[in-house]
Length: 158
Image (tube, rainbow, N blue to C red; front, side, top):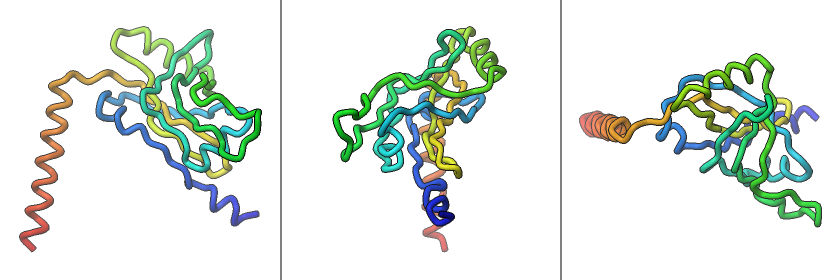
């Protein structure tokens, strides 16, 4: 049994790379995610995507919208919907903090990564974020290119 747990631990990691490019991350939270049926099997196979997904707070609950979890290939007629709304599990205090923060203009909640924790549960890392302006994105690209050039010069000089 211990070998199975070790195999599961940290085996699946689905990142939302666009989120870090499009948003300035202010604070992060790790939330449990309510799944139905065969969704966990698809996630363990790595068949999920966080592209164009976002979170909302509705009636004191946090919901992840537009998270794609592919249908399980060996599933039967009771397979899940691919882009349904999924409830996130957070403490009341965290939900209250997020709700108060998103009332301010320009702040939103975006999913950063979907992973399986050491106990085998699916977790979603979400972030309170502010959208970057176009010039901020250009500055990030320029900085990344300068770093890449510096690394190449260092490699060639040795």
